[in-house]
Length: 275
Image (cartoon, rainbow, N blue to C red):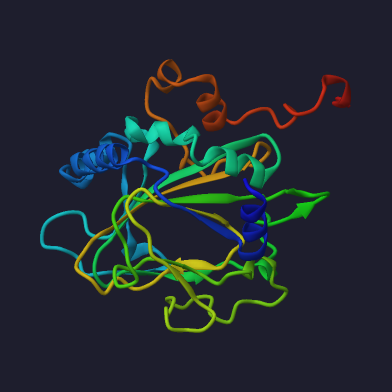
């Protein structure tokens, strides 16, 4: 991270990285999602990529459901294998994550999200909540975040397409966010909508108040969310489960991130005592 990026991340709670995924990678990821979406729900679940339709989400505003296709849903994507495994240790984003967390880190979730016209996502989180799984912290000149996420845009998404939205600086607020539970209004003075092009990435502290503007357009918003945490943090349920044969395909760094490194990997053995 540059000095300016460190300043902005501390100040805002997020960074926008342009074109961190090349066009060929975006095409490959979309092609693999196209293939998964050609499957019925039962077939996708049999592959380990069960869809969670947004009708059951407390955060989501359900969009218009198409006559054909999967509608608005999320799924745990690493079970699909393929190009999704490459993003675990993507060189354009992982160094940022490692500095933001400041400890040996792990991948604790990887999900895909599709949103159609009318869909949106309510504001949630904010520093005053003091949630143990999301705390933003800065100690002795280093970031010590408990959870940092990457939002990879797989489609161009403007404000009218339901783009990601935040309240800058809310990761350090001492007051509860008055907009929590509301779909972000891009015209509200507190709200910062963040349009993105396919291949862009938004890195943000989970403590930041974030959501998504209502999709008022006709394009489907496709987004991948990869979540990282210190090594001592448990994965979010089965949201980081990998596909069969992952250990044979993956490099050591990728395996350590997906399986979770030792929480004491950065300390000498003499510093660790067992009682």
